[in-house]
Length: 138
Image (cartoon, rainbow, N blue to C red; front, side, top):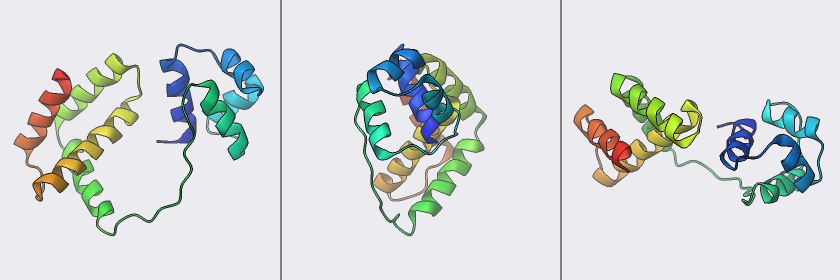
């Protein structure tokens, strides 16, 4: 998920306007609007002020991915993409949580990755359907 999408989601989930966040963060409305639209080059200090204004905290890190994580994510993404039901459930969850479909899809793929690691095998279509059921029930 891109920075701008994450900022917009946090702001909307909090029921805030760009103007109210700008006042709390001590930043301009156009500056925040540009960040939400994927433009600009924010400083860590500005991002920290935005995080605080949105009632969250900023995490900055540099980490290496485990070598097989990319393969697992691709397999999980392929499983989710190949399922018509996944698309339906993702739409329902996105609306219910006031989030973008791409953000919910990314979370579903991470959940599939996690289950793959726990089960120590790739998930089947039946496993995916059980996960989707659980997500709808939660």
